[in-house]
Image 1 (cartoon, helix red, strand yellow):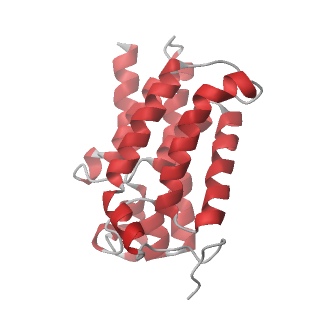
Image 2 (tube, rainbow, N blue to C red; image 1 turned 120 degrees about the vertical axis):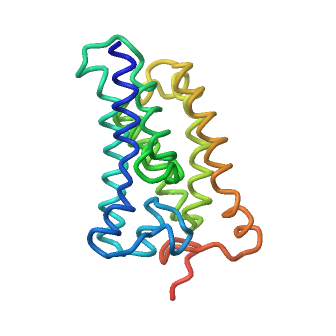
Image 3 (cartoon, rainbow, N blue to C red; image 1 turned 180 degrees about the vertical axis):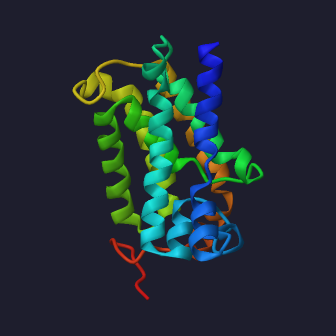
Length: 209
């Protein structure tokens, strides 16, 4: 019963549509009607600005982290990644926003933070370095997903300080999320190939306006 309750709570936490609510409450805008039509962090930055974007980023990360901590709070012996995954699914298919959510990146990062802070810092470093090289958030998300997935297998062997032991569930979820992230970025991939994808105004490949 505890596990079922935690999954439900995790999903509901993930379902909080941070970008949609902040847009409607403070800007009288539904960000799903602008930019990339996504309710995620990147589109919030693009449509509502840095302050709103940063707030949504932190809230979306926190959703994944809090969900992953639930087994500790409930005293349950279950791999916390299962509950974190429920939050990721909630973020992507939120019951509070007609099941139209973000692309799973920020809440997945929050799940990693709750699971292993060191591995989160390592993964965040991969994302930041990739973004500085590509200057494209969507491409960075996909590259990072691949590298982080590979790292779940390699780090326990070559750098156990970051990830002491192999966790098959971590790898399985990483593979699934990587596939999912690619599927959610189908339109972005088309724009990347066409050379029309949005660039951030910093990094080696930036296009400053």
